[in-house]
Length: 413
Ligand code: PMP
Image (tube, rainbow, N blue to C red; front, side, top):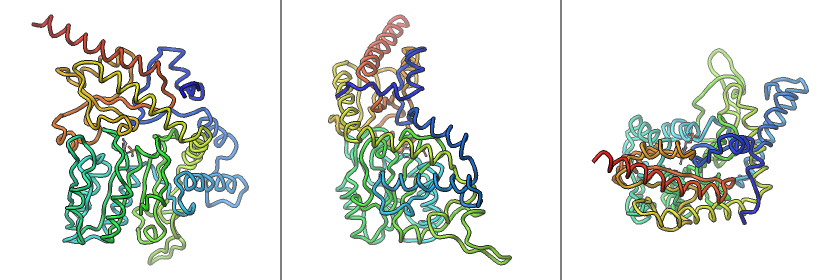
């Protein structure tokens, strides 16, 4: 299962292997890009760079064709019914903000309720605080169970005819658990509320089917699915996109303009004011084609094998606290953990010295940290291009960091 050396497809990882041998385990933050993505960016700028949707020149037409083909590719990747369901944004964060301010703010009023989980990334939390402040709606948090899973019972108790928006992540960027989106969605729709899915950590790891999930909206970031930074996706059902209002205005998104006002294009163009990130969309397309060629199920199986190895190894080391579920399948790509008696930021410096790139902090999920009773954790997050050697280097580093601080403590005593 771990036979293929995927690193060969990633210039960054080849470079790391040939130089300092650093192990990249911060994939939940951003992923490395396969050569096909970099090649495609170069090819676009070398052969087809022109503005889209404007010129009649053949290069402009070609750039437009490439850009629109990328939209179609994204639609296929998440099984959206049509390319017109896909709006290009800057990131998952921007997508969520556009939904919050273009869809929720105009529709919500005092007495309405917004339901999100306490485990949401700040990108799917702070915008809803703002919506609540601006509309008079109430923001209500669904709890997590003691091991950090979405608490369906609490959700059932809190959803009501007042609920207008339910916005939840499909996969947690801290604990890696997979939320039961279909169950959440069925209940959401029974109450005629709108289901928004933050797919920032699911689309990079799981086959995601927006029709099967029955999501009204789903968002993700290109840079976490091996595509370029600065390109994000907002999927919406046609009716929802028709109801959603643009939050940015300017060129490209208008149908016509006169002195007194303007009329807008239909979705998706009505949202894409100004010159879009054409190269970003084209690079994202190349990334998605690359993933499909490798086989999403195969990549997932490989990640799960790596995750098993990491969790089994970590469980064998004393003084390691792992947050979340005990089951490897509930750690999709990430393990949040701490080393007893060592501040995660100190430990992260130790990992850095060991040549392991990982993360320490609150992972943009401070309310979840409060719930877990910690200020911060370490987080290792893997991708299919990691291999057994990376996991073993990581586990050895855990031992070394532990020993280093244990020695430091005894010397100080
Ligand atoms: N949601 C989740 C669950 C995330 O992990 C992240 C990124 N860490 C985001 C949203 C925001 O993504 P971006 O910073 O690319 O907008």
